[in-house]
Length: 137
Image (cartoon, rainbow, N blue to C red; front, side, top):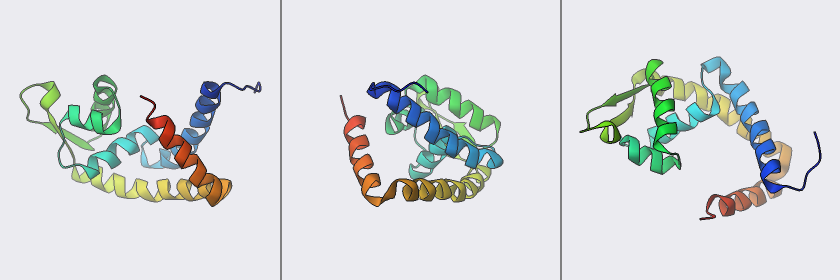
């Protein structure tokens, strides 16, 4: 890999590497990191609309919609009601809750691995930096 001082490139590389670890851990459950995140956020909300779920996750509706269709096809989420596509309500199915419970074990394992690898002090500093970068606008 070519060395770089570009923040964007470094963040993209780091994100790909971290996502790969989560994707590998979740693969046996049939999820990837993005799908796990969506299910986890959905479990924290009470039947949100697609629009409110997108806002809560910091995603655009079209990206969220594509991911929801995949999870709906797997029987993990249910889209129902609403006056139109924007107002449809999203909920976890029983199967979705079961899969999320299984996935949590894999997710926690990767969390612990990464925390151990970088250490508590660097983890705290990284989380603070990421919080800053998350709120640039």
